Length: 432
Ligand SMILES: NC(=O)c1ccc[n+]([C@@H]2O[C@H](COP(=O)([O-])OP(=O)(O)OC[C@H]3O[C@@H](n4cnc5c(N)ncnc54)[C@H](OP(=O)(O)O)[C@@H]3O)[C@@H](O)[C@H]2O)c1
Image (cartoon, rainbow, N blue to C red; front, side, top):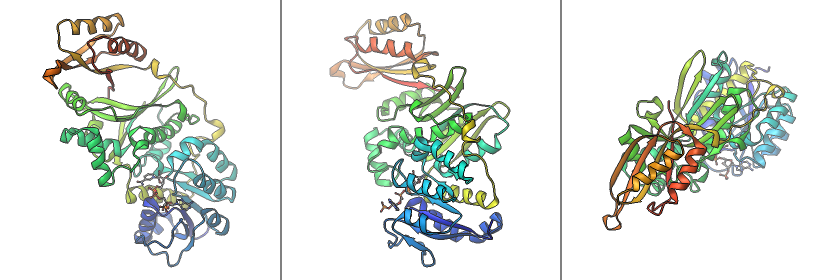
């Protein structure tokens, strides 16, 4: 190892700029901890001339990231452009082919191509590091691969997307509906102009795919994840959940079961006493259940320029220290191919919200369908008429644990009753 870690950074956006700022402000501290200075010698961005509040005076600037990789002699290439295809992947693969260590914050890229890229890195004898890709600042990859290495992991449950958590928290605090809170989140910069990746659960699923691979030593299976977002959650659901002793959170959950791995991202009711229920706003948190450690919770900023830069730089320090750990905790050839447990086999409790005609016998009809499906009800709320002239009331029920397939079948029958005015809303209850 040379007496200096030479670094090239592709992408000077939110994370790239934060990384340059951190390296600049903490250079002495980092040199002590890494036992050598960390020096950025090259950067690439479509526009390196824009004022980003960082001094690029002594740094070679490229507008072509591949040219930067080809023409610079560095130890580490940091990919902070983003996207699951195209230039981000090309930069990582070109860097590995040249024998450079690679650091990326790109969960989309790794969720789709992480195994191939990790295999290339292993073959080339370089590190592929990605702490920033999963829950931004929170060192959860390090915790799983190192700190919890002595445990078999039974379940990981996390609030993996800050945008969704902000929206659900703000809906609860203000009583406003999803669309209004989303618009506010966009104006505050907590949600993208096109929010679909976040609010439809895809971003959380990318992170969950990586957590699953590290936790269980298995090949990434992004397509095996059940994904459902938060667009259908109403202010009334949040208020009813609260009345029943729950909060609604978008959770990513991965569980190792006898039949394989269950991976799912969807809104959940979680008990108000559970630590995850108190993680509010843009914060993220991950609860890991290990057989010796028990439950362990990790919480912090899941995004943002400086928090994410903190994770990128931690990977640089590891590389400078010579820490080499297989990308997903064991060599790619040793990763198991595990079957995915389909969502219809999921077993849990459910919250159901129905808009029904306010007349005698309705609840009896619904109860009969649940009884026939062997689903037992735990509690029921009936709420005032949204519009008395329509004669429609909201009925909310929670069930005891049952099989998802039975619940879906029962809801189809309930939804077909002439007294049921809207498609039923179903939210899973997660016991934590
Ligand atoms: N933002 C966060 O808080 C956060 C947290 C965790 C992980 N991440 C991940 O970190 C990565 C970067 O995110 P970010 O928020 O920093 O994105 P960003 O602000 O959009 O920055 C990306 C930068 O790359 C530049 N770029 C685009 N195409 C390029 C090309 N062909 N060559 C060189 N540069 C190019 C962009 O330029 P233009 O602006 O001109 O397009 C932009 O300056 C993503 O993978 C993201 O998922 C972000």
